Every structure is written in C-alpha cells, then in structure tokens.
Length: 155
Image 1 (cartoon, rainbow, N blue to C red):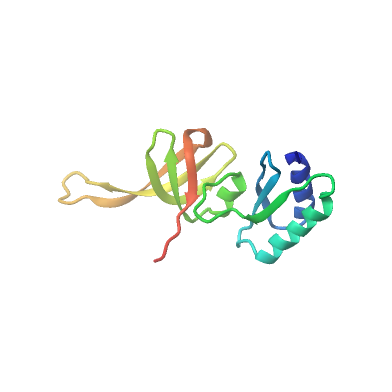
Image 2 (cartoon, rainbow, N blue to C red):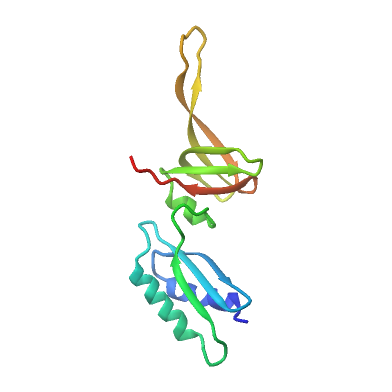
C-alpha cells in the first residue's frame, strides 16, 4: 500500500512557493489516491493536471499500481483545514454544531482556537410594536462543531 505521508510530502514539494494549499490526502487500501487542494481564488484544472503529473513522476507504477485523482476541495463541502476558514472570511457560511443546531451567517474572524460568525436575529425591543433584525456575533470552537461550509448564493 502506498504511504499517505509519502504522497503528502510529494504534494508539499509541488506546493512550495505557490498560493495553493493542501486540504486533504487519502489513500484507500486498494491504492486509490485522492488529493484535494484549494486556493483563495479557486483551483484551475491546469494546475490539477500539473500536480497529478508531478505526483506520477515521483511514484513508481512498477512497484505498486495506483489510481490517482487530484482536484479542488468541493464547493459546498465542509471545511477541513484552517486555511479554508481564513480564505472565506467575509463570506456566508453554514455551521452545524454537534448537537444538531444549524447557524447561517457571515464568517468574520478566524483563529487557531475558534471562529466567529455574525448572524441576523429578530429582537423585539421594549415598547416596540414589531421585532427588528439585529446582528449578533456567535463564536464556536472547532471541537464543538460537526461542520462548517461555504454557502453558495445566487442573489
């Protein structure tokens, strides 16, 4: 079986000096290698092809046969690494906590320990006839959430 650490090292070599970053590497027991990369401005197919060829140049099919898939972290897929949070600051995200509650808001702050979104909530002020929408910040630690993902908007 091909070692995931070997593939990760090869990908890291290719990424050096580039604005792309590694999201995930998986190697299944039948040697299907899946490499996910991302970039603040999106991933170009030509770069996926280039990375795929680079990986293939470093692995020996004579020693071990494998299947290789290189692509971008899918739109609408949960974030896997901190850098994905960082490149989505200012954008709409959906967060689901481990207790099943979903939150939708704008990602405003990201640290290595937690992240903050700003949500819209209805608040009825004392003496007011109708509730009005106000912004409220909600901060989550990474271990209390099930997932966070970018929300695609067609407005």
